[in-house]
Amino acid sequence: MKLYQLHSKQSFPITPEVAWDFLSDPNNLKTITPPHMGFEILSDDDRAMFAGQIIQYTVSPFQGYKTKWVTEITHVKEGEYFVDEQRFGPYKLWHHKHFIKSIEGGVEMEDIIDYKIPFGILGQLAHPILVKKQLKQIFSFREQKLIELFGRLENSSKELHFKSF
Image 1 (cartoon, rainbow, N blue to C red):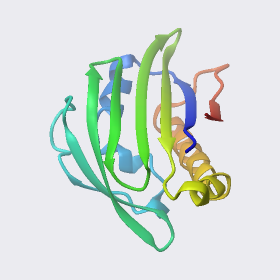
Image 2: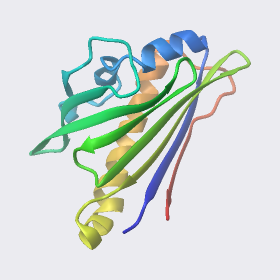
Image 3: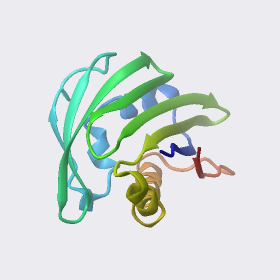
């Protein structure tokens, strides 16, 4: 079974504290998720992020398919990074690292997601057509939303790469 990786970087003219406050609040996930995905938080969005936190969502990754997604915040270093891992949901594996790094004029936000698709060879065949396409759309939407909220650093570039192992 293939392991896939999505790697994204964006830079913004904000402080690390502003970036952390936004990214570490589960309620902001809805803001940066495309509306067509029907993203709703069901539990544990009312407290500051901590290692061991379980957050439940519903999401519709594809039209006509709604599912529950349960993630655990497994690692937190306040102001620098956190990791969420899927416990139940649409992926066979979902391990998402969020990094915030101070750079000249602002911050760099970096996401590294390692994931596996269910359904064996059928999942692998669906990856480039459905899953990869959907993830590109999600991260494109996220990029635009974050630019609307925080602006854009001059001479900054956005990176989005996929790999498979």
